[in-house]
Length: 555
Image 1 (tube, rainbow, N blue to C red):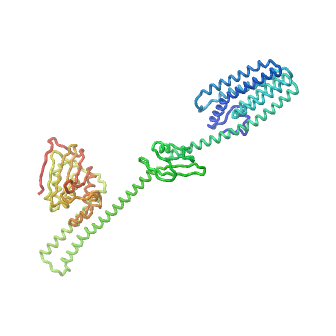
Image 2: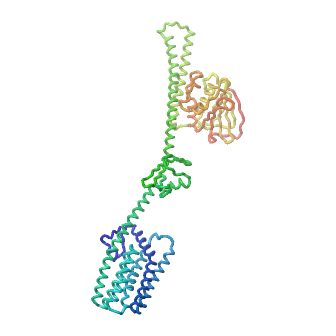
Image 3: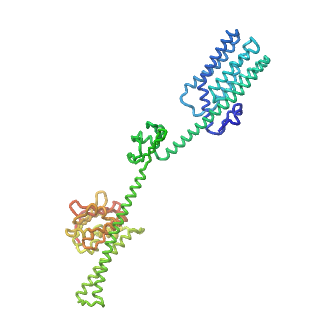
């Protein structure tokens, strides 16, 4: 921005250009406001001094021509007073000004100076006394202007130039040595006035620049604080707010947060904040509220993920322990039978006993194959199958075939109730595998009182396949993890006959998700476990004949 170190005279005498810096416009506004707010003072000074000088000239010097000089000054004072009245009615501070008003008043100042210093022309007593009197009243006026409008050196110096021009004109008309000496003294005073104006103007300019930089730094700081996501405030020694951003204002005024000394967490609806309160040596305090909701949520998510990982590791450990039993027991049995019936065995074995051993080997081999098949089925769930073929079939047929494919000895205890009049459009083989898992699980835990399977068409167009046993049911903890991988290998499944891996429900749930179905497992109100497969209405084809209940028992 303009420094005035080398170009003050150029600024005063030439175009009032403060350079390309955008802050120059703000400084021009300051000059404008300073002059407009001082116009009534200038008018008052002109009126008082003009009246006082006229009285002095008329009564002290006996001059009467001064009555022609007085109206000119009163006219100038009236113009200044009119400007003040007009500007005093304006509300608020202008954002920008063109500078034309100041340039007009610079010209007026030149004319006013010439009018004021023309007083000697109206005094006829002595040739050197009039100029002496004129200089005496002109110099204090210039000093008064300097004190009233120090930010407007162009106006002050033009007034001084007008007074010097009028004095020079008087010297030309009345060329005496005394007059030229006083004109020279006026020139020296004008030089000292320029030096004083330059120093004063530089001080005001430097003050403006520092204040502008401070305001820019304040605005930059507030912008940074607004975008920081933190609630920031500076308090005085009585904890009254001096500076705050919108986030702090919202916390205090909208959410009713009370500012207290000390660092602590503050909970608001839906958010958690960490307060930092620091008292400065000056007595002021800096208060910062940091939103730690995301951090706390992340910590909670991390804890939940860690708990899930721990639970998965625990379930996997249980699963691996049970797998050791499931795989080791059949192999040990087969190995023992082979040692008894092998060529190197010295134990005599009859034909009937041999056949029993062979049956034992077959039974254990079947158990081993079933265990490996469940493990393979579970691993297949992790693979994406792009080829899922849709079949349309009646649920009663799928249920019957699922039961017939079971090897469970109590499958004849299954009772089936099916609504007619609808069919399902899903992959039949996977759907029947889900049914087989659920019915087998129900037979294992509720064989004493039978198992019920029901296919129902819901009023909203969905279909529900329900598999219910009459066993002891499950605890809340068992229900929560019943279909979770590895967690199904619990004591409930192991204590039945020692051959249940515990992956059946997990496989059933995974297959349902692949088919777009949902599986819900809960305790029935009157005992036992109820597993429900919900088929969306989009996969259910209703027949126009309506529905009826079809009941049959498996043979």
